[in-house]
Structures are given as C-alpha cells and as structure tokens.
Image 1 (cartoon, one colour):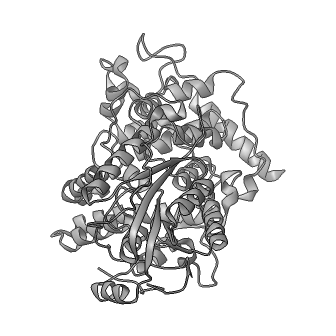
Image 2: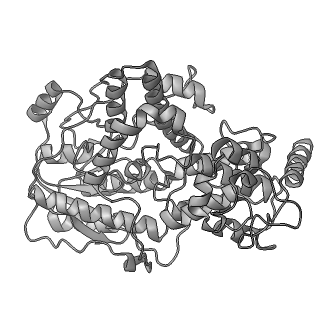
Length: 506
C-alpha cells in the first residue's frame, strides 16, 4: 500500500480543523506521545457509521478520556426531495447496528433530534465537552453545517477537529497543472491514480462514555412520517458491509470488466450504500482491491480490478465537480445548455408512467420496477432510463435526479447529479447531446436473452425475447398485459436533436 503525508497530527493547538488521520504505526505512537488531552470530547457521527477506519472517532478516543458518540436526527416530515422510506429504513438499520457495536466495546450511541448546531451546543453544555470531532461531508449542505459547528466551537473556546473521510482525495488535492479543477474525467483520473493513498486506520476497540447523560432513542421511520414494510434488499450495518466487501473481492472484482454491464448478472460490488452511509471506508475498499490486483495471476483479472477502482475515481470526480461548481445542484454544469427547452411534466402522464415502469419499453420499465421494489438499479440501466426520460420524454433531468435519490439506497448526491447531467448531455464530461441511446438496441447489447427484463416484468415471461429488440408494430403490444410504447424513439430522437441545435443556434 502507498502512504500519504502525515499531515497535521496531534497538534496541541485548540483549533485544528485541518488534521489528517495517522497513516503508519510509527505515527500512531507519535500521536500517543503528542496527543491533546481532553476530559470529554464529542464525536459527531454523520455518514461514517462504523468503528473501523473512522478517522474522527479514532482520534477522539485517542485524545480524550471520555467520548460522547452522538447521531443527530433530522426533523423533516412526510416527504423529502433527496430521500425516502427505503433509504431511511436502511439508515435506521445502520444506526441500530452501530449502537450495538458501540455497546460491545463499552460505549453507547447517544441520539438527539433537531438542528445540528442547537443539539451539539446543548450537548457541549451538558457534558462540558472540551472538543468536538467529526468527519467532513463532501456535499455543500454538509459543509455549510460544518462551518456553523466550527463557529460554535470558537464561541465556546473549545477545540474542533475534522478529518478527511468520505473520499481518498478531496477536491483541492486533484487539480490541473495550473491549479484549476478538472472538468473531464480521464485527466482527473490519471492524476488521481498517481497520488498516494492513505492507509487504513485500526478499528476502535474500546471507549468510555460519561455517566448521567441521557442516551435518547434510536431513530424510527415513524419519526419522519414514513413507513416501510418490505424487507431491505441489503442488510444494513458494518458487519454486513464487510461481508459484502469480502464477497466482492473474492468473487466479483476479477470479472468486473467483462460482466459489469450485464444487468442480469450479480457482478457488481453492491457497496454503494455502504460507502454512502459509511459502514465501510473508501480507503479499505480501494486497498482491498489493490491487494487483490497485486495477487492476481492473470493480467485480465488485474485490469478488471483496476476498472473497478476507476469507479471510485468517478465517484470522487463528481464530488469534486460539485465542490468546485455547487451550482450544478440547481442548473446545468455546461452554461451552453442553460435555458434549454424541456416539456412540462404536468402535461400528460409521461412522468408518472416512467416512474412506475409503464412506458412500453421493456428495458426501461424493468429498471424502474427494480428501483421501486429493491431500492437499487443496475448502473447500465440507470443510464438507459435516465436518457429515456431526458431524450425520449423531453423531461428535465432534475425530475429524475430527485426520483432516484428518493429510492436508491446507494443514492449519492454528487454521483446522482453527475450521472443525470451526463445522460442529459448538460454535465461535466457528458455524453454529447447527439449521442442518444436507443432502448431497443441497448437491450440487444446488454440483455439479448431478456433475462433481466423477464425478472422484473413477469407479464412478459412467455414472450419471445427476440421481440424485446425492436419496437412492436404500430398499434400492437408485446402481449395483452403489457402497455404499448408511449412514444416512438426515432421521432423523439429527432425532436431532441432539433431542440439542442435550435438552442445552440439561438
């Protein structure tokens, strides 16, 4: 494994928000010798719901006699543009697992509900904490709250320590030769791969919590006015995440290159939700993959594992884009396409039929139903369904962006935004607007036997899969129980091309 620089470790300064996790055993010993000493510190859990390789928790336990591990639950109710019942059910499961793990090592998970600054201030007063520790969030909303917490700590004259955790390289670390952010993935990834990667920190084995502090109760779905009666497709929690990583390394990654685009195959890592909620660290995923690549006996297997690692670079590329260009959450990354004509989703039922998987395009409907039933969709099908919404139905990518975030267990704001703008042709390193995927030919390429389609569209179970490769004749259906296509792809493709050309000319 490669190692990065030590950074600002164990500083005795009261204010140290640029601290980096320690990297090698010698540094661990140095931290122990030079560490700050606090009677009580707060560790604020956010998207790092684990004990292993958790930089902020590791340092809090090292540097304080007692630690208050706290999770602060949001207070919205009923509906949210960026989450939904399945996602919140997974979050609740991860928190329950984390609470058990903390109790196993002598600690506890303290739960509060409210606005983060208010709840942390109350906890600082109650515990007389001398320091607050947390891991940095890659999203604009999280960063804004971090600034508020740093100011809170200044007001109380206590230390604030925050750490790099969600990514291998933060946006300011991967820049062009002139110090500018990348707008294209390939040069970004070349640079990203050359940089040293921080090693994995040891798991926290024990901690002490203050006595006499109310723990609060774990979040429940009803707190948000939500209900989820289905079984989660992924077991939540750190133990399950580690099992998924082990299975991916031993079974999936060596065949990732040739099988990753097959939606019917169980050939991906299924670690997206774990990375989103931090039940496993991206450093451990990267290094475990690197070890597997180093031990591969065939060049094909090594290249396959590197292809998987490139997906981690894509993840951080989109996070860097959102960091440097936060306006992408509100508008198109490419200013040339701002103001492009989109249809009104309220005019007709196209958007509802897309969401429900009733478009008459089997590969699209299979993906949308998989999403609704499981909180997951294969990545190749995500691209197909996204391009269908934007290029065939002419509906704004932000509609699909929100729908995906409400349902995907692994929904990551930056990646989801980047993927949708890529499909719409308006984003960073996006597909050219004139490159429009044909759902019928995509089916021929990636699900020619109709295995994936029939899995999620049982009404097509007896239909010859060869009929999924071309649209049915006008006025006909693939079967009596399945809807006819709601649009003609060739016609809508021409409409899209004309709109983009007109906008560019105007």
